[in-house]
Length: 120
Image (cartoon, rainbow, N blue to C red):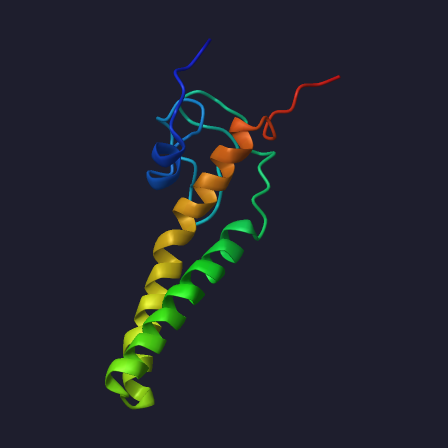
């Protein structure tokens, strides 16, 4: 059975199957299903590893440092103001973006034939 191509953004942002775009990739917060419930794509071979977390650390770190520098240059607030602004931003960003980043990595693995590589 052939499936219409699923965009990387759709698979990542909605945490959907990279082959059919219908089935959910996760059973829990970051627990990947063994197979897609809609098209039965085998997801047991996925290995996103620490990739999504590393990308988020770099991205959120750059954003946090930029905001901290801007706040310090413009307003020179006490350190507790930095903590009150940046802590929820970094924690919320990490928690909110980790699932889509992992789903995006799984979609990239599927697109590059790393989930179900051809057998020789």
